[in-house]
Length: 172
Image (cartoon, rainbow, N blue to C red; front, side):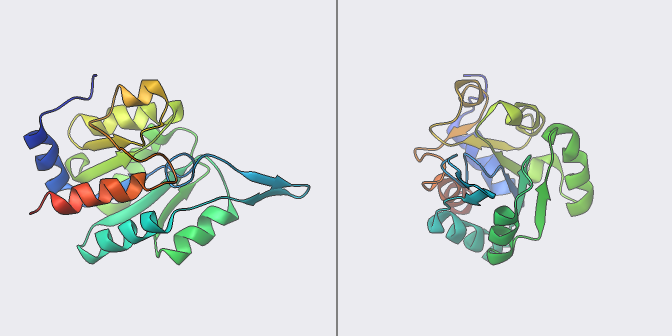
């Protein structure tokens, strides 16, 4: 696996995280979407992932959402979780990373990224050199080969919370 690092290095990187950037579909959701005749109707989110966002915030760690979709459902979820950094309609996530760094002032060493599919590969490659990368257990095989940490949980079923717990527990 390209992303493999020692447990000590994993924990060192986790301790440095000040911003967790998350893909939405396939990470915060199970990648399923319900459609009606009027379009996208529902996405399923896990409340434990939401608690992960809250626990990170309590420790001064910010969360950002980065998705290629433009969805009122995602913006509503971001508002509910008080996530101020919500980047929607971003097709080239890697090229958007400098904008996030500029918006937040965090360096790559202070960033964790969790993604699940091939459209996340570019940003995963950019972050993994000095930051922390993760994926849900059911991510695309090419993503699983390139991350530092593979969650035991699948997308939409606590993968984000698992990463949050890893980051929060690394300081102990």
